[in-house]
Length: 262
Image (cartoon, one colour):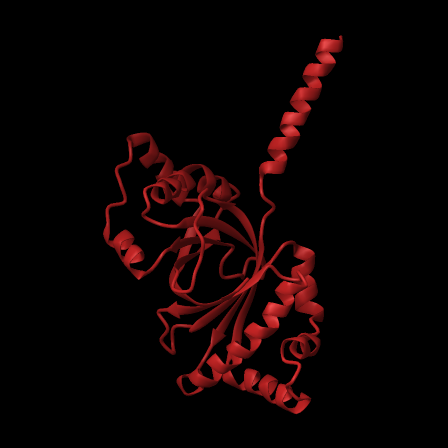
């Protein structure tokens, strides 16, 4: 009996340790910005100003980080030209930031010598320089393993997916993720992840998930896009065919990391 209890205890500890090894999911706030050509320089000045505010938010651990990405294609009729991504440790922090962020308090910490008049002028310039076209709340579901680190100049592909049945996330993790992991291991891409859209939600929402791939630079992205996708055996081909039926691929955007705060 004593040996049995010891064995059960060992198993429980092993399961507990394994559960602890799985990292907690990130929560991300995507904000898509539409910027007219004549407002380009004002928009850059605005984001420089806001990066100082985000540094204070990182310092007090209310956020994990903030990124500014430029989007391609970026024609005036093709949607947003920029994307900001704010990283959170949990959903509570993200919802709190959206609903009750004390921007002025953070601005005064970031720019103690700036007058209230000048700060208010920057907030007015913020509103005039861009239109926040879409705000999307996201939870990270799965990702490849590796030691990839983002830096200014990192390239990203973002595929917007609409789930068609409940097997979609399983197909991404079990069929497509191993293929992406192979590409990461071979140095053809930096990382891949699957994200779930929390809000907006409902039958009328544009997408339900994102798949995101990271690349060191433009050269690595171009080499991947022009290279071979690799051979698949018959069983894998059949699995991929079935997996594709679980989602509707809405569109793909390419993005370049312009600024980051950690």
